[in-house]
Image 1: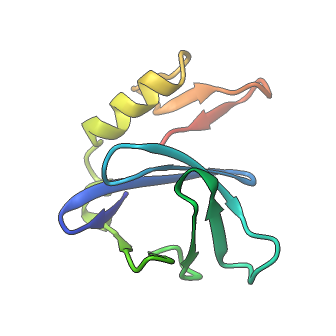
Image 2: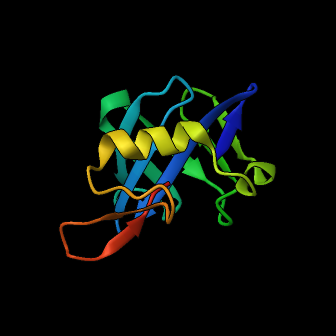
Length: 110
């Protein structure tokens, strides 16, 4: 989970797929920008790119917004994240925080 001005955003990665839920609660898919350095992503739905720190703790968007990872929230499950995953994946199991992927394996969310 990342935070911006007290609001929460979520970023998950499964292989090359990056899923983002913005601080406004909007789900967005992103991918690595192959025409740029290896720490850059592109989000078509937002028409904007972003760079992230090598440790994944900070994401800075082209328009200036900065998200910083909130380590304190990792201890207790976040209801918003669970609700998002429940809506997005029919096979989502809140107990294990995983869903059954098209590849036949279970994947974490968020």
